[in-house]
Image 1 (cartoon, rainbow, N blue to C red):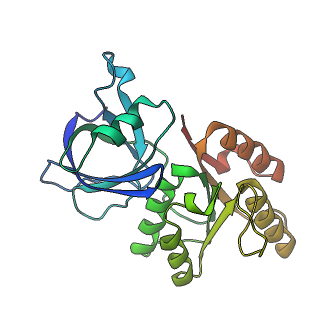
Image 2: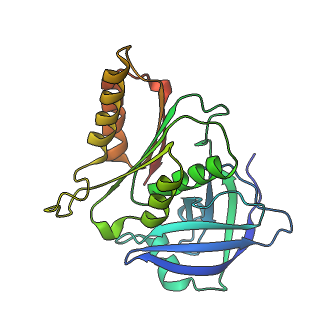
Image 3: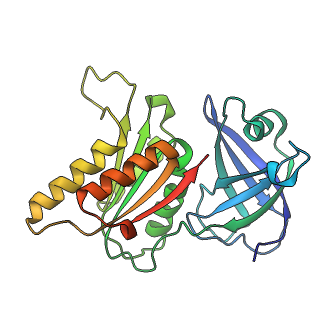
Length: 249
């Protein structure tokens, strides 16, 4: 059963990159906005007469903290009516009609296998939420690999924050990889996300010498990336039940 629509107020906006913006939204309810990391909200934006053409869904980028405030991170899409409205018309103090939380792209009850969070662009939102939730609540877990594909260094959302987390938590591994960045000094990882998780899985298998290392794969991003990742993960020997995905667009 879907939740009723409610009103939220945009209380803060900052530019994360030239084309990506963070929005903090406070609901009018007096109870905390309770959600599971990985879930999303749907906004009803005044961009079309037909209801279903006004709805835009965005993963929650923050984590449950007992308040009625949550964060969205949105990329401006060329020709995208929804994101154009959010960037051009929404300011601090604006009201938004929203419904949520929704979705089943959430953590397993027991994290008894390594987690591979594989994403591009704003697909990092649910994984930022999940990672902080696990660490903040001392949830027992195995290794976590956050593999984030970007074009350029300037596209690396939450980069400093995630790098700091990696320094603090030995079980958390932040692996950004850049497809269009110059690396003449060999200080960054170049390429696409697929090579990164294939390399890690192969090294784990060789180290153990006992077959596949137990793992769950969470994919979030555009269809082309997800389709290729599914094929490659299956080719490594994992099963479909090991793969969970959230498709953008």
